[in-house]
Length: 129
Image (cartoon, rainbow, N blue to C red; front, side):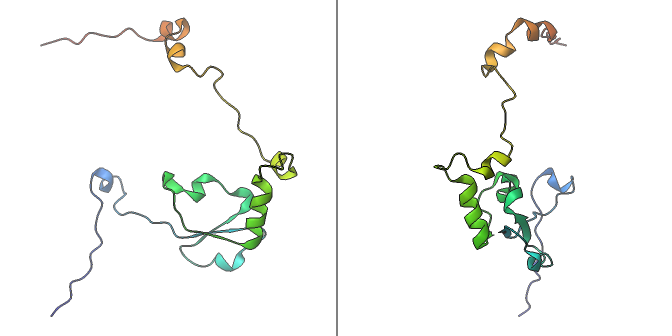
């Protein structure tokens, strides 16, 4: 019996035409506090300091469930940063807090306001042939 060669399957859709032929899977993420030089040379493994950790690294593409390996010190520092009872933590003060861009959250009122409606072109009627 002859064994079949395993072919790499292509993605369905127009992604093939846009140079996205194959899915790229991400490997595990190692989260450290001080240094993790030993893992830098291993292919497929990413490293990230706990101070620069963000959502894009934890859940790339909005898909939750990436395999994360936490060092002991990074886990302790995580508790120091996000512990709810200690609201005046010095580690929390160092981080930038997000600010709201919009002051009025009622989008319907914003769109229907006179300032916006004066700048919008009136709707055009389609010509029938």
